[in-house]
Image (cartoon, rainbow, N blue to C red; front, side, top):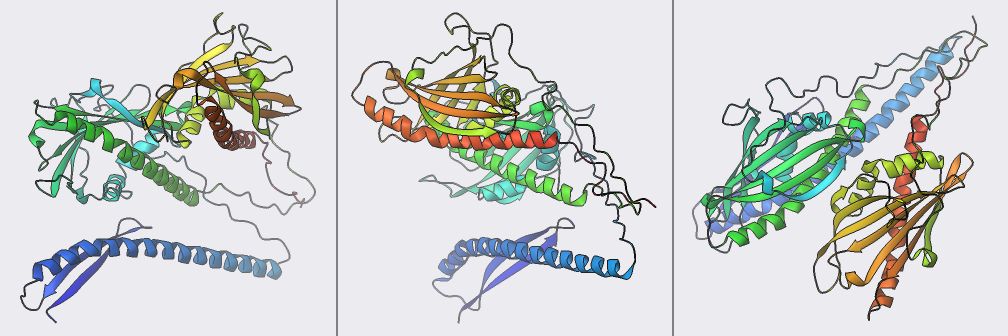
Length: 537
């Protein structure tokens, strides 16, 4: 009888298709009493969870309603066309839809005043990579959707997802001499602190600087200052996000690095550094995953607004319009070089290999070779999907006598370890070899070395991908083998682990590879100038 709880749900439009929901809460006290502060704290603690639950349920319910409405509209349109068809002697003409627009039409990019290939971070040269991944969009699209579009509010959404409060993301400002000509802005928010002593929350200011790169990408540098955190005046956290074009500019490689920058030495410097390096990878991964989702939404909305035009059905009779001439899907692709080895195997444990996966590609061995083994983006996407980090690849190089003249490259990455004792992650180096076969196929080999895994010096994991031609298609067989370099107590356990773990990764590889190949082959199919038969007058 002494208080009431008042809540306010505000819904404000942010675009023609979206609205922003904001929840406010306050306890209203009819009279003062002993536990007033406790009641107030309880209300402010519990209502955010209720707001999140309301938002999640509302989003789900609205999606159901929209889907139902779309279904009803399609049904009504179908019935209308039937009535129209029944009323006339001839088949109604289909209306032409709006012509498709370039998805990047109207998007902004670097201007004459923007800085190019410039960095501003004081600790930039000491940065440590904490995450990388491939975004399915060009750097220009990524820049506009994540950093410019006010209707998306990407950074505000990201920070709120990370449980930050009172997030403010201002517009970019042109840079001056102090900023080396780089666009800049200051993002502010409140976040909780989990220190045993001191304040429970802090205001944070993130000063961002933006520059473009001559390779067709861009870079965002952020200097974070936690105003109320312990020793806040002694350090800053510098984060670098680099967006580099890949796959011919159609995709973007995202790389995030971080380093604490110390303004002066102090007792807990090492502890602060360890905390920064521990916490930032999770935030970088969350940023990447949210970016993937937002870019998919943007593409879907664009596709919905700008569909491909439909041809009007002719009232003529008798002639079918010709198809476009077929396109050679192998056009412009490369194959064996003069220095490449033929019918040669590198792996010492090749004869002990076990088949762990097999399948068929709907494309020739030459196409499979170009799409999957020459394009770095597929290699990086596959390993990223398996939870690998800091993925780096050297270019293919002619093999030496040591490599039996087999083409060679080096792949490195970080991966988690699930051993009860010892390190929680390990660096992995895979030495990759590729040779051709006289039957028109090729053999891809991988020798993996887990630098920090237990007993790593005693064994290597070998993988073999054998591609053989099958008419216009090609067969693939994947094998694994454990090469024991030196006998040790747990070698049988290691062998069993390799036999158990590798089939799953091989199946994931084949499924992803099939998707890439099928998408490419679909894009090369001839298109008819018009569907159906044309009727003469």
